[in-house]
Length: 168
Image (cartoon, rainbow, N blue to C red):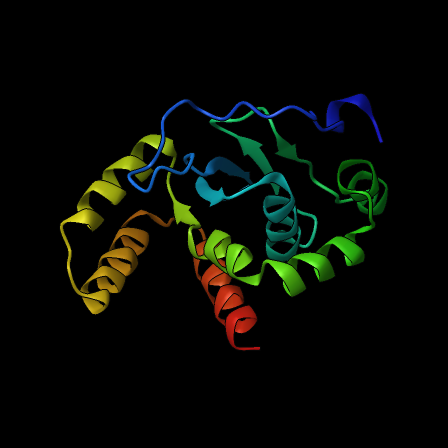
C-alpha cells in the first residue's frame, strides 16, 4: 500500500466531553464522489468496519476531530491494512466487531448524515428540540432529502445496513 494510504496510529480526541462524561465520539468525513457526509464512531476499529461495509471499499473515512482515517480500498489492500491496524484481516475484525460490539457498529451507521461537520452541528441542535422518536426520524428524513443532490443515497444505505445488522 502506498504511503498516501498509510493510516495514522495515534488518535487526537478532543478535550471536550459529552454530557454523559464520556469523550465525544470520533467524527469522520466520508470521502466519496457524491454529496458530503459525516459519521461518528466510538473508535477506529468500528469506523473501519462501518466504512468498508458501507462503501464496499469505494469510500474513505477522514478524521475531523482525530487524525485517524480509513483509506479507500478500490484496488484491494484491505486485509493488509486491517492486520496492521487491528491485528486481524477484514473478515476477522468484522466478525469481532459484530460479535462483541454490534451496538457500536449500528450506532456508527445510524449516525451517517448528509453535510459537513458544521451542518451536522446545526442538525443536531435542531434534533435536541424534538421530543418524539417519530418526529426525530421525520426531521432526519427532511434534513437528508433537502440536501441530497446525488442519486447515490449514502445515508439511506447506511441506515438500512444498521437495521439489517440490528435485526439480522
